[in-house]
Length: 271
Image (cartoon, rainbow, N blue to C red; front, side):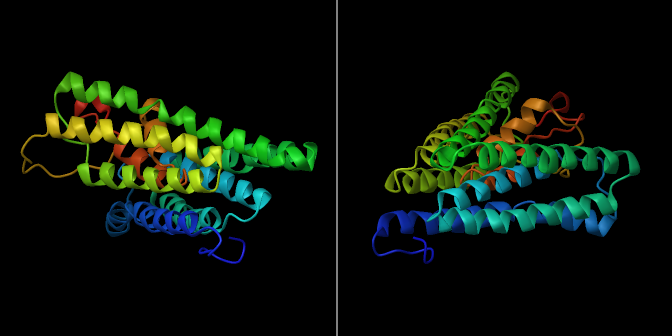
């Protein structure tokens, strides 16, 4: 698939790679309404930038992996698009956030997206011999993705405890589950365990969330939607987890949905 997204030599892998790109493209654009509101109000209203910083880090990791592995056009295209989108979100946040939030965002950006990524490049590309680079980078991407898949458990427990799925959007969970299926099959047909395995978790937790939504959904109230105002470490990781586009696209969106308001569910949104 070096020549493009579709290869006649690997039609099924190409088909699922393109499908994953389409779904992930839509998921990456899910926060657009939030940032349109930020632009109109000229204020971030206290919501967190962590989901977008983490998502940008994930995109850069997968781009590096795809470049080292080669013949991974679907991974390159969607994560390159993700980098542009997430960088745009972060830039808008920096423009309209108060000074304290702006400094926290810059600190997290340089710590994760610059320092941590540079360290990984040095270790995996410079210090590791070429025959082992794909395995080392793939293991790093796999570990990062699997770690964030644990987070939905905390939000799931909140939904069960409160018996409310008010902040668990079914449509988003549905499309993230579809994305996990597409990227799982892409990894399966390309025999890439570093893409396949994380999306098993994405599919599993996506199904759990949809089942919980059906069990605990309530009629919509007339109350207005509020932007997230607190950042829970578990909630941040959760959103990241579903973001496997391959392994990256769900990150920005789920993290944003996982951030709760102190006026609802004790400060943590049930996703």
